[in-house]
Image (cartoon, rainbow, N blue to C red):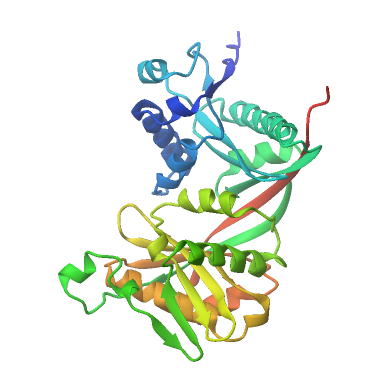
Length: 344
């Protein structure tokens, strides 16, 4: 006699519960299981998990009546979690993690994808939109999640390369290495450009404007307000506004921008978003921004710099990064699926 498959149960999580220690620990545990043999920094997952977006735990077999702090602490452990992140009008990001070794992993993944699609449709309705695009990004080794997306009709639309470069130890004092703002307190001249850190609210808004211009002709571009942009950036692991950089031209003003982050263990610096406005390309802004970024984090004792690039970038950005010494270390795929607001 064949044992029946365990029931798959979804339990929504309210924002107050998502911020509790019990929920954070459960989220981090599943994120690490989802990563398999890879060591990951769960900071960004936790930041998104605690945000005021639609969030859930999924259980296989026994499940609590509600996913509140007491029941999460008492168990059983969830086998997955998902967030439908309302990024911008018409654009919803799927952020999710699952234990791929669980015997019911495929069934759990299917339930999670259906929840994400249904919730994305509800978000569209809340915004007064008939349709939105649901976007999911999955690392190449995550076969369970990729298969679930493809079974649900998602289209694989892009390949991304994670690229890294080693940062050799900098000749600084120990006290200077302890402060990541050491190298960032100074400006750097690069021809007609000055590379400096973000210093004011006006700089933040200019940084947003430049990145909007820079990515307008890129795949996956979707206009977002400054408030949406600010919320998304502040969820990045290790992000601090005074460790973001701008490239300033004496006549054109700010023409390039780089948002950075870092791993919780202090080893890897992330170039999260790098963009140069179209009319300023060719001035060396991108390479200058990366140089100052690398020197800043090198001085703080970081050993690796990392970025992600569209493998089919229309600007040929991957060629620039290879020229600067970055090499590919991993692949990630973007999947799309249009979702409709429920009728009636």
